[in-house]
Amino acid sequence: MDDPTHGYVNYVDQANAQSQGLISTSNGVVTIKSDSTRVGSGRGRDSVRVTSTKQYTHGLVILDLEHMPGSACGIWPAFWMTGPNWPNSGEIDILEGVSLQAENAVTLHTGDGCSMNGKNCKGNTGCGLPTGIANSYGDGFNNLKGGVYAMEWTSDAINVWFFPRNTNLDNVLSDNPDPSQWGRSIASFQGGSNCNIDQHFKNNNIVFDTTFCGDWAGGVWSQEPTCAAKAGTCTDYVRDNPSAFTEAYWTINSLKVFSNNGNNSPRAAEKASDANTPIAASVAQWTPTSIPAAPVAVATPTKAAKTGPMGLGSSSQGGPLSLNPISKREAHRGLPSLDKDATATSSVAEDGLQERSSRIRRHLKHHQIAAVGHS
Image (cartoon, rainbow, N blue to C red; front, side):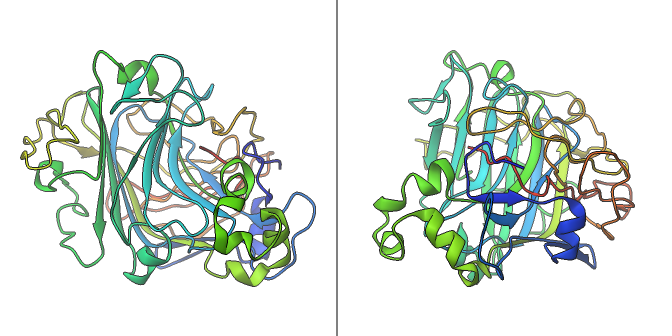
């Protein structure tokens, strides 16, 4: 499967991912890897892309991540959300970076007519906010045994928080998370006259992927002296140095998605410039969405430009998580085992995803296990 972001990557199907040991679950913890044993060939290094079968409009997404793909020249991992007809349904890059990047940068992408924080969010460039937080990405993140990322999306704003593993995670990982108790977000995008969030963000799928080189990591190769000294091009390095990617894997403890039962303003406006202003209390009660068990199907991506929309299910109120255009996977707490997908399209299905109690489950779906790169 070709990568829409033009990466040097080969997103494999479920059978190949399983036979190569690129996907696995153990005691409810999901691992998604990229190949680190063979010299690349053809489309590129084997990898996996997982996308939810369900689409969301608004929600509170909480990811407990123990390990993300480590810092390595040419790598481009991301945990993000995107909708159909990119970029007109929006893209939210919650955790993303390339090569030796030291900190996470949160970025939104839209069609025409949306500006936030003084930046035009249109297209590939988008409107990003550097977090300025060490250990929020790559090796630094992994050295702390990871942490928790949370993203709250309402009609009024899109906010992202990061909680290192050594902080108090009781509330954020509870069954009743309350963002009003979390302090300031690391990135805040306020809607308003310059950007109607409900117009520009809707029906987004959740995606995990790891690609290599491509429009971003490949495009800035010559600007990173450490990497440029290793090989003339990004593709040459990624192809010929499989052992450089032994840390190119995701270890997902849980992924929970909550809805606010139709309320649009769970948080009062928060300005990124008001560093010392306390955040107003939450107005709406977030509750777990209903995610019934269902196989994850992987379809061939048909998307243009950098982000590729993954076709998923329905509205923001519950529904199965599965891999749609690309084989995607979703992780919610308590993923048991990866069973073979019974659908006709190659996919990474996660059958029998049982979730403890009736809260959100985690579907590990695989985008042809990996495939369309995103922003």
